[in-house]
Image (cartoon, rainbow, N blue to C red; front, side, top):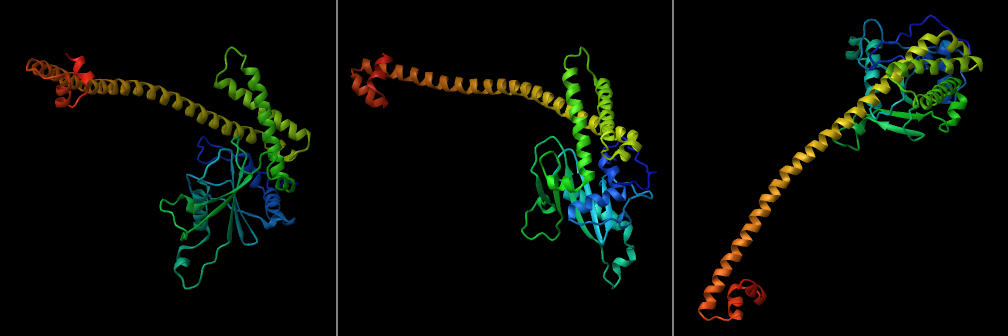
Length: 336
């Protein structure tokens, strides 16, 4: 697969809200975008010039952006890659689409008498996270509505394709790009798993060591792909960009994982402390209540004891006293 337009800016910044990840780099290349489009639509187009890559540039700064947007045959294809599952893809795609339309439609045309036509949009997410997910699932914008309706006045549907091993095998067989990407990702994962087992016995293992081993794992995976002619040209020419992007992805996910673990432990400690405090308070409250209850019961027994002795002095029998008190004869005898 020949690579055109090689001089591209794949620079990643520290803001994870928009990351230029590896699959995004790939899909900025018309040949690669066409490969994925053909696989998704059972088409066999061969001219990459049919692909018009859409980029939101010229000073447009967005808090969220998708990985690939391109026109072909009056279809606007918006693709996104996810390594962490999120049900908010329809909402993100709504934002992507709106911002793309802003760049292609003149404002004055919106108020003209002539209908403004737009390309038919198609939305897809390629998921390859470690969390087990279905092979294919459909997410709808209306699922996010606070007030459910069977007839939403706006809808946006996104199909999520799980591209992990043993999922959507036909799609991966058709697409060299998706198949090659997953070979690369799985190789990185295998390398990291191997290094993790070794690191468990190391006396010191910090984040700096993790990042160093991560770079080693990524570069070995790139070497593997180059050696086995798996998108060899792409990985050879974009080694530095791919390495930086993957390091950003993994270190971000690791930070999120550590933060979640720390928050969990903090929450557990706080919950434990709060539980003890609440337990004490409830214990004191329960103690007071039980004390009051016991006090009332003891007070009633003392009252009954006084009455029993008085009535006995007046000559009443145990049976008569029990009847007057509404108690059993055994109860009366216990207080005599």
